[in-house]
Image 1 (spheres, rainbow, N blue to C red):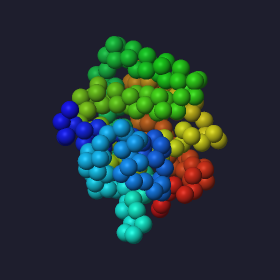
Image 2 (spheres, rainbow, N blue to C red):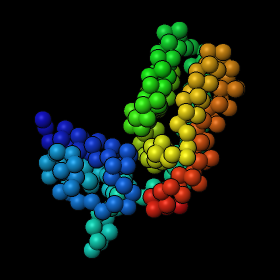
Image 3 (tube, rainbow, N blue to C red):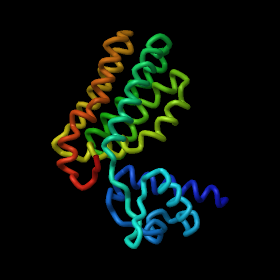
Image 4 (cartoon, rainbow, N blue to C red):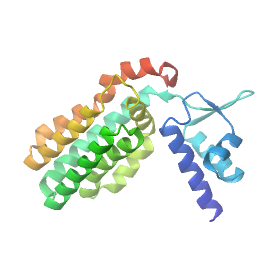
Length: 221
């Protein structure tokens, strides 16, 4: 495997550890720790750390060390605003073009998601949530837009994964809202669909007080 491939693997693995809270906001880390966590060599990990530092996921404090950056709430809310604005238009578009096969695929994704909901598998449930929304962009032939959103959605995705870890907040309402969104797509109820996706994504704002109370040291304003 080439050096470039190892650097990409190291970057992806470390970023996933941060997104999934395996490396906690505010945690002090080192190159040696990340080499152990990823199973990848010193040089690729060092390059990955520099890239993550440029992206704001790692913070270097002189004479202290390197830390996992805390989650910036302003970035969370702004990323939610961008995604909501775009996704409403994506869903309006696919109402006009979605095929019976694509509807069946969305139904299948929801059935699988319910299995992992009942198993309380946080990581797979989160992944399936992402796959459900990504499929909208795929149907609309806007995959580039989805991948662009991932570049600015890091803080939002970190927050969303933490939300699933709060026992006081139900996972099922996410799944129920997905089912509602799918039915509105079938019925081609565009305005109701736009309202439903706004409500779905605005869970960020509604639940933030509870999430922050559960993880008070993870956030900055």
